[in-house]
Image (cartoon, rainbow, N blue to C red; front, side, top):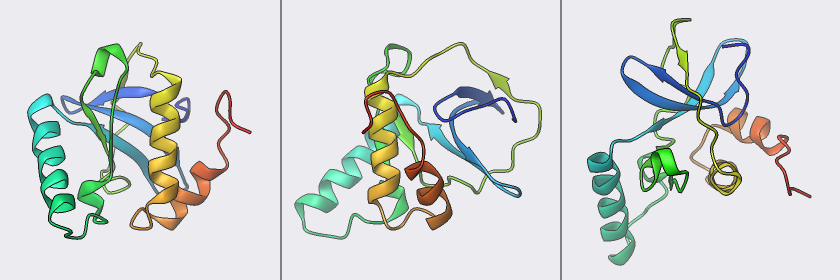
Length: 131
């Protein structure tokens, strides 16, 4: 886990994740949802938004990815920091598009339901093209 940096993709327990940050006692990672789960979350979000219901819950914190390997799948921030990862992770040879990385960073920073600790860490991460 120590060799992972923001945006690295890994597999754990048959699920794919995007590494976000690590603290002394917590690992933050966004789960990459299946296409079916992505559609469910996106549909719920759009229904709530259309009916003026609150959409600030962490279940609605996600980014639809454009990276070819994960096109139209969501990087979901709902359980970020709540999954315990063993050292038996498989780093995948996939690089996320810079636009996806920037969108994930912005989603984390702008949502007040995301952990303050994670927001502070991610805010300090420099990506290509950041000013």
